[in-house]
Image (cartoon, rainbow, N blue to C red; front, side):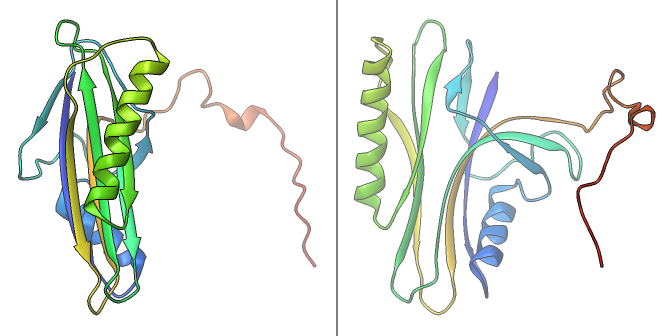
Length: 177
């Protein structure tokens, strides 16, 4: 499986607008993001292309990701986000971790410590630790730092076995006056 690491730094009139701009810059804004835990399937190939490459798929499709994002709105506060990973060189299996914080050193240390602990928890040895970390400082408007590991996209297909909801009766618990 090919997994692309991308990042974006956003600024906007609100933290949500800054987050959205970071999604645009990372190339994943027009998808419904489905957050994954941080396990790399066998034969995974991770790339950091520098420039975001739009994933396959269309507007509104599901996009499976591991994501780290930090939003701040206080003047002179920093937002840092990062993803770290380690892989077994033979099988390509591995683990990713995502961290956010107020300094580059904090995020890098958290990534390193988490990767070491995850390997120890599994009593396994993986390859060297790698990471992608980005950050920004709030000057006048809220900022967001975001790093995303993009797995794959899928369309919204109706499940043939569950699409006949018309046959079921539902009782509403909502009341109105």
